[in-house]
Amino acid sequence: MTGRSRRGLGAWLWVWGPAIAWAVLIYSASSLSRPPAPPGGITDKHEHVAAYGVLSAFVLRGLAGATMAGVTGGTAGGAAVLTTLYGMTDEFHQRFVPERDASWLDLAADAIGATAAAGLVYAWAIIRRRR
Image 1 (tube, rainbow, N blue to C red):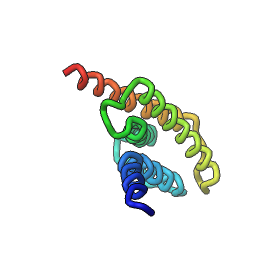
Image 2: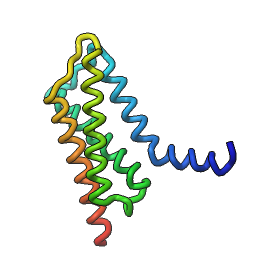
Image 3: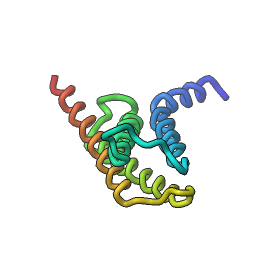
């Protein structure tokens, strides 16, 4: 591997590493037959909104090249769509995990979290540009 390709790989991992690591964490948690119950007052839907919100922010970071200047309506929309698609694959995956099943309500919570986070980051980028 040349120095240039190592830098390229390092830069790519800097940009996309958080999204990949978070997606692996979600997949690992989805592979548990009996995941731990959320703390009092928090439902599994809250967990889905939060987990997929974080993933969406990381995917948006990747699509934007880890720069606020790269955060546009298109990259925010793309992040929400890609994250929701990942949620679909994760719900499908859960069909094959003992004692788990796929849930349209979980997918809806994933999509809400993904869209809300992408929208918030996009709004923040707009505010920062106006300063």
